Length: 89
Image (cartoon, rainbow, N blue to C red; front, side, top):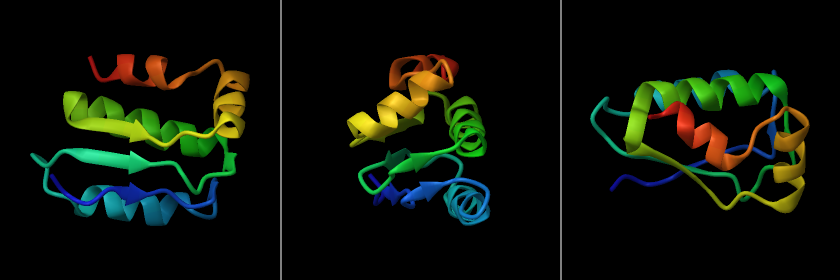
């Protein structure tokens, strides 16, 4: 398994290009682990990128270390880690 992609503290317009670059640099058949341990702000654009990654990677991706603060921000957008994972199936 490859090293996790540690998401930035602010997952928003300023950081999404770097996250996209890192996601697309990984081999298409490689499992992806997105580590949200550093995230304190999870913006709508960040949510779109994560949803797209899950849709693209299918069952080869997981989101780990999601803080309560980020869970709350996800809920404001009508999402949870479980609903994000449903996109992959």
